Image (cartoon, rainbow, N blue to C red; front, side, top):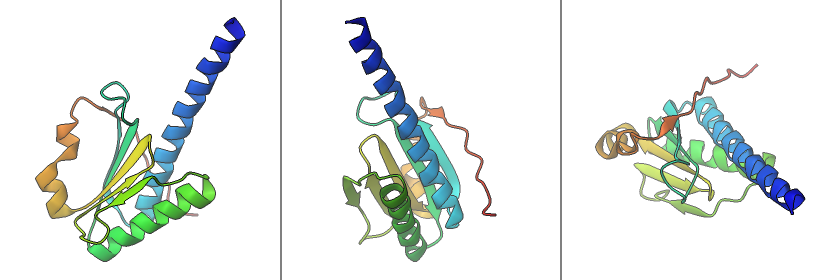
Length: 135
């Protein structure tokens, strides 16, 4: 029994580490595609629905599309994750990508200011994110 419990605990830690790694990869991809004001919120203590939000701002609908598509490529092709849902791609202003335990929110500046997710989830811990510049 103790071995089974230890395996479950190790598996849970591994899943949390994997979710954080994917959130950081999404944030880095947003940075590489000129996303601004990128934040990662750790929501694990506030909800059981998901673990992390990645929030970024883009300058235009075209840029939001590019960021969204590149995040898809990174998470699906490189990290073997599968997107569960996509909202707002056609309407612009706010694109939501749902990967289950992480949710990516891409906003134009006006929409981000209006919804203020960063403030709505004020109790969330901020995950330190320092973008790496491409070599």
